[in-house]
Structure formats: C-alpha cells, structure tokens
Image (tube, rainbow, N blue to C red; front, side, top):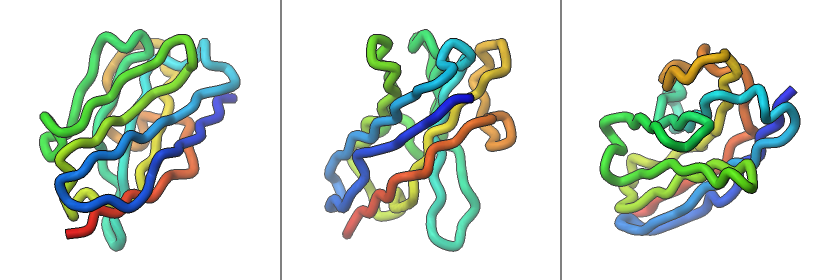
Length: 126
C-alpha cells in the first residue's frame, strides 16, 4: 500500500503563488510516477501534471504549462507542485496520485493511477 497526504492549499489572490506538497509513505519503492490532478466545483477531475519517481521527467497540461512546476524531494519522499501566476480558474481541490505500474510512462488519465490523496483546496480570488 501507498499513502499520500497533500498539504499547502489555501486562499490566494489572482497572480499569487502557492506550493502544494504530497508526502508519500508506505511501499514507496513501488512508485514509478506521481501525478497531480484537480477538480473544480461541478466539473470532472482533470490532469494537471506528472513526474517520474527519479524527478527527471515531467509533463504538464497545456492550461498550466509555464506557470506550474512539479518537483520531487528524493530524501523526503515528497512531491511538490509550485503554482505561480494563479488565476481564478485554477480554483479546485488538488489531488496527488501514485502510479505503481513498473514503467515510467507519464500517465495523464485518472484510471492510470492506483493511489490517491485526500485532496487540498486551492481558492484563487479575482
């Protein structure tokens, strides 16, 4: 089993920044890829970005490319999502997810991840 706990959400004005963290515990040796997703009220959960467990490869949704950065702190089994130039449309519950399929495919679909955190709320005011 893999456990994921997100933190760092909150309220920020448009143009501001937030940094989300996801602490990974349990069978971390089985994790190959980490993903971030978000779900706005009344909308389906959508892909934000992904990183392989080595931290060398990333992939982002077009809507956040150039504004959001995913990184991994290897020594702490933590994956971070740095969000800059935030917009009101970034308001959502943000989730981290872990993929344990033994490849480094940077998955973008929900059903490609086996483990999920509880989510953290990000609200961007205009």
